[in-house]
Amino acid sequence: MGEAIMVGMAEVKVTQSADDMLIALGLGSSICICAFDAQASIAAMAYVVLPENHNNETAAGKYADTAVPLLIEMMSRNGAAADRIRAAIIGGAQLFAFNGTGVRLEIGARNIEAVKAALQAERVPVAATDLGGSTGRSVHLTGDGRVRVKVLGKGETDLVHLGEVSVAALAGDSR
Amino acid sequence: MSERLRAHQTTADPLAFQPAQTSRLAGRVRLPAQQGGNSPVMAVSLDKVLSRIHALPELSPVVLRALQLTDREFISAREIVGVISVDARFSMRIVKAANTPCYTLPRPVTSVGEAVLLLGTDSFREVVLIAAARDIFHRDLPGYGLSGSEMWAHSLACGMAAQIIAELTEYSNPQEAFVSGLLHDVGKIVLNEEMQSALAVIRAQMARADCAFVDAERAILGYDHCDVGGRVARSWGLPQYIVQAVALHRKPIVSRQTVPLAGYVHLGEALCCAAGIGLGFEGLNFTLETQALTDFKFTEDMADAALSRLVDKMSASQTLLAAP
Figure 1 (cartoon, each protein chain N blue to C red):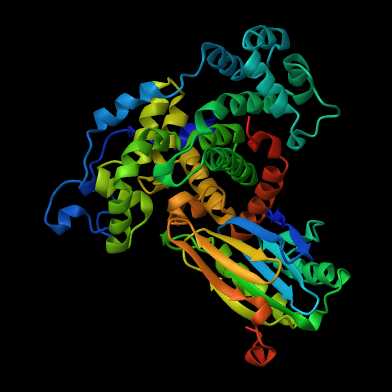
Figure 2 (cartoon, rainbow over the protein chains, first blue to last red; figure 1 turned 135 degrees about the horizontal axis):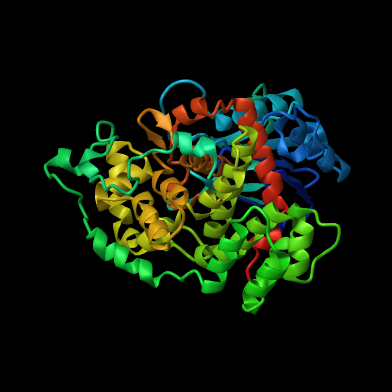
């Protein structure tokens, strides 16, 4: 029987058990990065809240630019190889509308850009995305690489099985 | 009340009821009136809804007295202990709240008296408010897609976020923002019953009119949770600044100016949406009044800093969020 592992804001967690399930609840503008090395059977999840760690904060998991290297380091420490990791990214929702002009709070859009850039910098291919919009999402990543996304009031969908993503399908794709 | 608040406070009655068809957003939202009718689709009399206010848990006399005492600049430990110790459950909740990591006490406290001495006036006042609000806000609201723990987390987080923004923008009394944020969604508790039967129609309205949740709520029911919440706050005898912040937190611009506390709660709730705290069916379906950002000189960098602090504070408040 696997374990349900809750991944909270700014956290990064790893599992080596195919029966475990990593869970991120209530994503707003934040982004959930699901990562999987099929050969080593290692799954990991990061719950990124903001794009850049300007002040070199110790909570590396909070920011896209420091969470992605941390995620890869934690997976590698458990036996994953960086070049085998495949990812799915979910979240980055935006407030529905902005009434007026001037400054906006577009945290979701900035998070999407920053997470994509950080994954690209580490050469981790993105196999699937569910980004933007103005709905909250919850994400389940099973220890065997299956990613399921739930939108409150709109049901659940299977986004991708990271264990079955062929390298050829992702060749040259570092979205 | 602070000078700055007085200076910006609107003189208009925040509870002066504006029917749906005259809403300021009526131009954006295709209201039922534009579909052939001239009134809300599922109008349930506001009086009938408001009669349910009395079913809400009353603020106990002990809590009310404690809040009055903590409203002073200096708190007499002996006096406050005398008032609170009458209610053992409330005392226990205060001790529990005081021991959460976000208050970084030198040692855990075991009594209300110790909490007053070690926390200091401002933090003690905050702890009393949190302990008092817990019973009211920790409840399932299926009409809004919120469990009790989600509703409570959203209320607490909105209080914290409003306070953080008030601090970052150098508002003179950030704790007023905390109280206002903590109580901002009390109207949802009263409207939950209507929402359960109206939800499908409200969702259809959002899709049809491409409007925010609160505008659909108002178009279909004829009022929204802000209108109702303001009335609850007034019926509890809360100060006018709280009544106003609760009633205006989704539309904080009055006469082209942001009403300060309503504005702090508005931006605080936007941050809670960004953090995904207590989204429910509404999700991020929230219209941000960018005038509030301009009026408070609240920049994108400040928003990032505020969100970062909110995440840290919420992480340090897990014991407040746990089931009783």
